[in-house]
Structure formats: C-alpha cells, structure tokens
Image 1 (cartoon, rainbow, N blue to C red):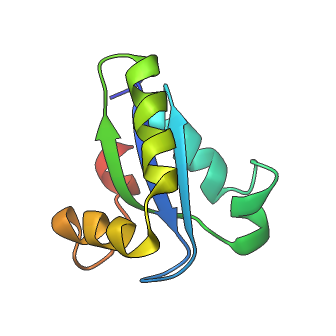
Image 2: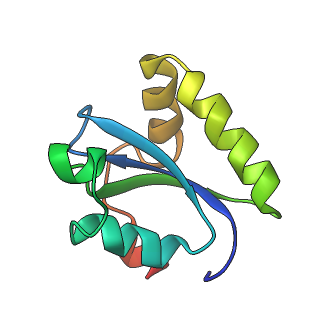
Length: 96
C-alpha cells in the first residue's frame, strides 16, 4: 500500500474531532500523526485514529477529493465513515 495517493480521515474518538488529509504514503503519514510528529491540528487536538481512507490512482485526483470532502457538512463526513467503519475502529493496523 506504500507510495499510492490516498485521502484519509482521522478522528479523536467516535463522533469526535475530524481531520481530512491527503498523502502518497498512507502508513507512514498516519504513523507520523499517531506519534505527534506532525505539528498543528492533529497534535493539538489529539486526532490520531484512522477511521476512513480511499486509495486513488494519481495525486491530483486525491487532492481534488480531499478538497471536496473538506467542504462537506460534518454529518455527511460521519455518514461516509460509518458506511465502511460503523464502529469507528482504528484502521491503522490494516494498512501498516
């Protein structure tokens, strides 16, 4: 799964604070968030649980998807997460 563009959503807890990001290396990027190596929002608010991700064919496609998701209403984001992860499990072990 390394070196493939991905959009991901992190959460602080079920129905908690959400963060949407894009990366070319999902396991490495989520590991950085989990270990507070990424300064800013996720470190400040303890947003470390990978609750949703999508793989994409190219980075421009992933960036466009990230921008669209960031504009979504919160409820739509929650519904998206719950379509594939209704328990809000941390999916990091599935990608690492």
